[in-house]
Image (tube, rainbow, N blue to C red; front, side, top):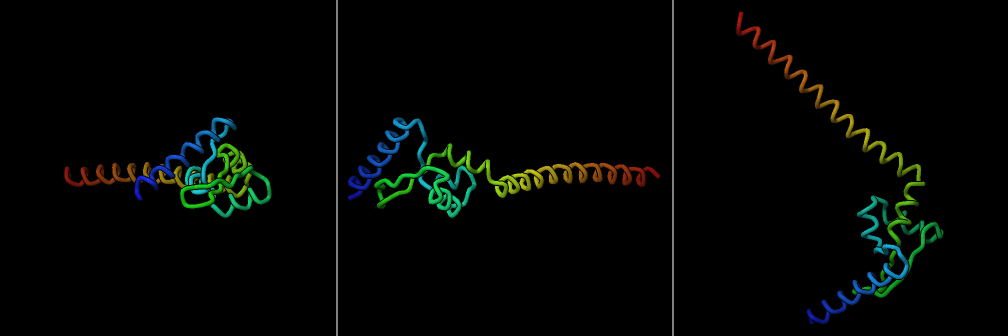
Length: 121
């Protein structure tokens, strides 16, 4: 039973590789597109239903599987103001963390200097 399952899974992966070579596109399942781009699965579904990105329905190891080209998802995500704002917020938070860490470091140095002055008195 396990070899039958492994064989089906391997055949499905081979089919995905063949599709990628034929189309010059990297077709991935929705879960992979979601994980690699940060776009929610519901947004991906909306995009392919509205024909904003191409999609395919292929036989997968667990039944029909929806595939989307990863480059099309990235391009469409770049056009989304909401996703851009989220990315800017995340970058903003990261930059704020760096600034706060520097400020804490400076305060620790000043505190150490003050404590050193008290000991020498």
